[in-house]
Image 1 (spheres, rainbow, N blue to C red):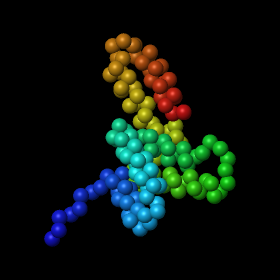
Image 2: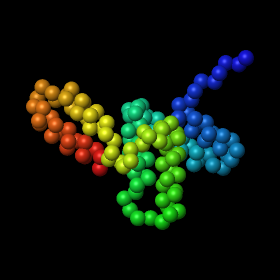
Image 3: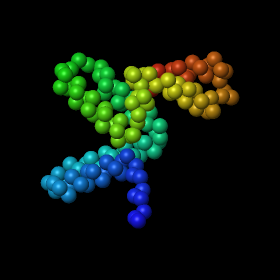
Image 4: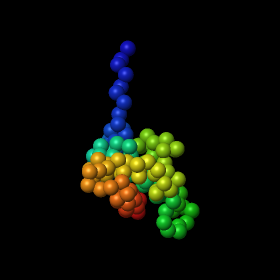
Amino acid sequence: MAAPRPKLTPSQELMTRLLRIVRACPEAAAEVLELITLVSQVEAATAVDPRYRDARRVIARLRTPLWDMGPADRETLRAAAETIRRVCRLKEDDIPASPTADAGERERISERLAAALGGELSPTQLARVTGVVAAALQE
């Protein structure tokens, strides 16, 4: 019996699929190379953001755009959001209802600021700074 294949990371899985496209259609190699570069950048970003907070915000923003658009355009954005959700292996309930609804974000900011500035600021001042930083990140 053959050993089970190791589970691929989301970006490895995506790169594997892109390379299959190149084998089937060599004319698409330049575009696929560009996509692989973007995927590697996403991989680097997810190493910094292991909880996929940025991906969650992007998905929420694609689902609720800030501008009016037709049904076809809206469906295109929803399809893009679904693709990102699948690639990042996020569950539907992991996605905030709106881009600014990530309830845990403020807590994470508060913890990091307290670790960095706890001795220099009072709890009231720290709460104010946390609020300003959280508001700036949510825009």
